[in-house]
Amino acid sequence: MSANPSAEFARELIAAFAAHGVEDYVLCPGSRSGPLAHALAEAGSSNPPLGAPRVNLHVRIDERAASFLALGIARARALTGDPRPVAIVTTSGTAVGNLLPAVMEAHHSGVPLLLLTADRPSELRGVGANQTTDQVDIFGTFVRWAHEVPAPMPGEAAGRATRIAARTVESAIGDARRDDMTGSPGPVHLNLEFRDPLGSDGGVWAEVPYLEFSPSTGIPIVTDPDAPTSLPAVTHGVVIAGDGAGDAARLVAEAHGWPLLAEPTSGARRGDACVPGYIDLLAADAGRKLAQRVHLVVVIGRPTLSRGISALIAHAPTLMVARHGARWREAPEHAERVVRDVPKSWTQRHGDALDFGDRAWLDEWKTAAASAHVPTPAWGRRAVAATLVKSLHRGDIAVIGSSGSIRAVDRAAPAWTEDTLPILIANRGLAGIDGTVSTAVGVALAARRPVLALMGDVTFLHDAGGLLVGPLERTPALRIVVMNDGGGTIFSGLEHANAPAEYVERVFTTPHGANIAAICAGYGVAHTEVRSADALAAALAQPPVGIEVVEARLR
Image (cartoon, rainbow, N blue to C red):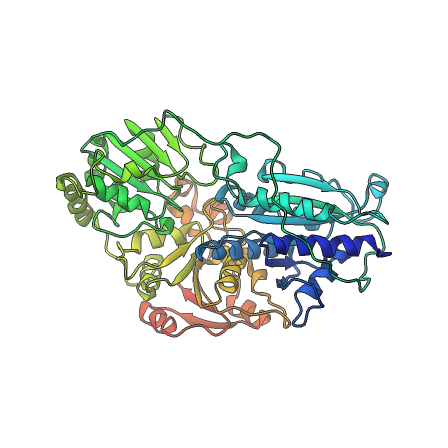
């Protein structure tokens, strides 16, 4: 029995997480989290002690950047078909609060994160102890489960940490059989009390078994007797594929001969039914007239990019929804049916085998889209996006920033083929610009191959700290293309642009005057400036070496 129960408990917890499939940790320095840090230092070393699990350990000094790094790692894990929770370890106090933006994004996008926050024991709370605040339930409804873990006691028998780890992982990965929010993956919070001593005790790693956790909540298996056996037999249907829709959206559209309006991160933007120019089309008179003739809208995934799409959904005479993000029940209230996943019957035409159906309606959309096409300018956001899209090949991974970047890609991306379809990732759960650099770093670290990222200058500056990778940490192969037009120019296309120009510039565009080259130099990151599509194409021609920034100067 160890004289240091905190160290012993931390070793059991890390070993139990490993037994339940957790391999990736992002650690931020701190004293109260010392027991976990010492255990992870051993497990994450090149020569771990006997019995210690092997983990992938990443250390960062900024908790907000660290949490988005973990988010990126988890998203890349899911791409491989082997989704696993990723853990973030922090000390107490404001360190915990810095996790909230990433936790909110993970909650809405269904990404499993383990939030392991250290805390003072109960006797040191409410008495003015340094770096102590109310961390219990600090993340509110944004976590699938939150648990206050009392400090380990001297002489405590082993097993408590294993039981906690089992339930934590089970709650994070979710259970598709459950008809509530605990059924979808998402973040889980363990607030871990530790008493002194907080240092290492040199203790041994005990073997920890896998524990089959059986929840006692009695949540029933989903059985929906009213679920539709097939989609309504209409001619004028439209399939909208939002973030995370997957290839099922293409199959639904092709089965019925309906146009497929697929966002870049849907995973469905390919095939003959795909109408890649839908944004410009819906903004034109021809598109608005076609929208008025729609009888049925099928939404698969979480669409968030276009007001034209939002209007099409809002005015749908009949609306069917599936895979609507992590919070799949947050579908529009007028939806006739909302299902967690796409029924096989939806990919069949009136119960028959796959058949492309009547093309007349689809051909109207494709012809109108071609007529409404807006040419790409020689240089600007759309030209940058188009150049980046052309550089992608089948299976290439690109992380796209929110705001103007993802919308530029939406306008520039074609209908890919099965042989050319890349993998595009964006934080569309809440569509914030927070942590985009760190997310891209996390994706590249987990993917273990070159990754491309595209973002605006404000998005880049918001998370410039994500460029910091310490000399003892693994540096990913990541090229970040930054579209620098001197501020948040996306607002120029919104209603705010009608205000006096000086007001718009100061409180919306927010020009920054930052020297991106100097920032990169300060972090030891390679920087290249380009001012034309040809120069950008040349910069993208070779794979990145470490982290590189290509600044596309648009002004």
